[in-house]
Image 1 (spheres, one colour):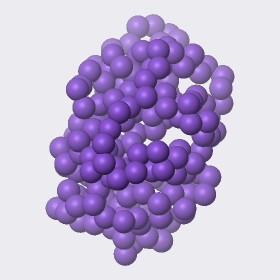
Image 2 (image 1 turned 90 degrees about the vertical axis):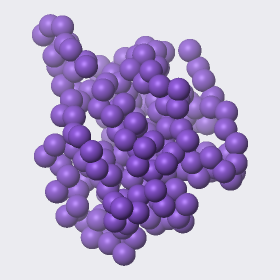
Image 3 (image 1 turned 90 degrees about the horizontal axis):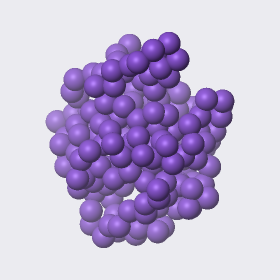
Image 4 (image 1 turned 180 degrees about the vertical axis):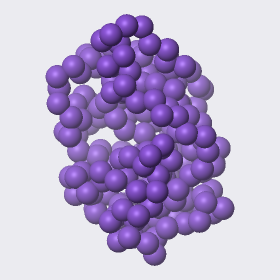
Length: 204
């Protein structure tokens, strides 16, 4: 299973990257809320071949992760793709540059949970990433306040939008960041894998 998205200039597209090992309802919640609050035309789930910050131990095959993500997404405007594999990129910043070059005229927004916002300084060339693509952050239980007070938030404080202006984010040049609002889902891929090791798990 492999899919390269088709798009056109002027569309507003959110990018949600990750291993999706496995995909779950939390990914879908972030995506549907981003579609609504940012006025996006699509959200792409970028199923990575291997997250540089994670061990490959316990990593399901890419085809399995793609299939699972497609089943969980179940939405006409959430596109599951392994385009990173075809681009040959390893780091998020390289993926973003490649997508911006390949789909010129598309307004991309990077989507992440508040937990990843806290970890952002561990990402390769993270400051370049913030200054390359607008970023929307979705609340996660136990992480949202820490994300708002994080070094990244402080460094780019002048680039933050109020939530009431979230729909403007895709139109702005980076750096531009905004916290989204909405219900929070505590589920994580890690917890699903741990539960699967001891018995059936409800992914709803």
